Length: 84
Image 1 (tube, rainbow, N blue to C red):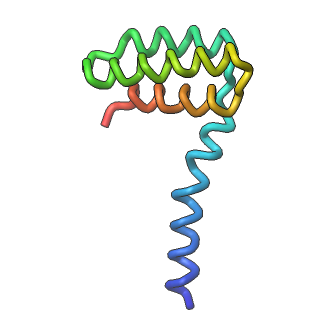
Image 2 (cartoon, helix red, strand yellow):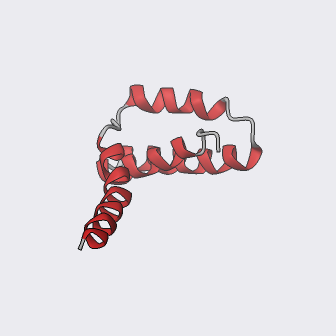
């Protein structure tokens, strides 16, 4: 029984973390400008290219007033900035 509870808690944590993290993201011009600055400072060329593509898609979504898509792409662009 305890194993089932622990497995359920682990699955919930894995699924819920990205959702809560995305809720903190604001899809506005100020956040987009900061993200552009962060992306420009990425030194790994593969990560930078991926982040730039996600940033471009986030800008398109922001222009289309699609907040969920914008936040998702901004989150993906931010992940390109995280050191692994």
